[in-house]
Length: 198
Image (cartoon, rainbow, N blue to C red; front, side, top):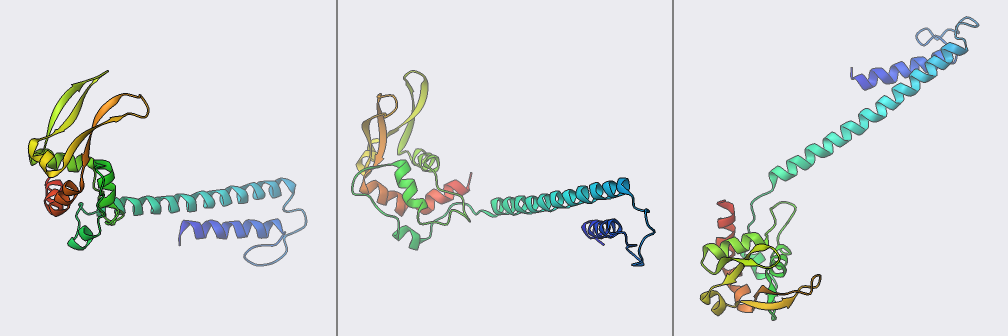
C-alpha cells in the first residue's frame, strides 16, 4: 500500500476518533475518553498529515514536469531544414541583418523538437567557407568583428554603417541582400551538417 493511502486512512481514523467513535468497531467510545487535549492533538496531527500530503503531491508533480522537460531537452534533434521548408523561407528584397534572416529560417522549422538556427551558426559556416573573416576592432573595448570577403560581397553579403540606438555610435553591420539570402538557403543543408559535426 502506498504511503499516501496509509496517511489518508490514518486521517480517517483520527477524524472518527474525534467524533467519539472507534474507527474499527464502529462502537461509541466511553464518555470522556477523548478529552480536549487529545482532540487538539488529533486535530494537529490530522492537519500536519494533510499538509504533508499536499506537499508530497506538489513535489511529485514538479518532479514529473522536470523529468518531462529534461526528456524534451534531450530529445531535441540537431538543426535541419527540409527542401519543402526551404521553399517557405521568406526572402527580403531589402538587405537584412543576419539575425533577421535567422528568424526567417526559424519561422519554418519546429523549434520545439529541434535546436534553433542561430546567427553564430551562420557566421561560423560563412567563416569556414571563406566568406567572412574575423578581425579585432578597438573601440572602447576590443571586440571581434566579421568582415565580408570580396567573393561574399559579390554574393550580396555586405557591410553597412548604422547608428547604434543606445550609444549613438556609428558601427558597421553585416547585411544579406536577396542574392545572399538565396545563396544561404541553397546551401542550408551544408550549414546544418557543419553544425551537426561540431
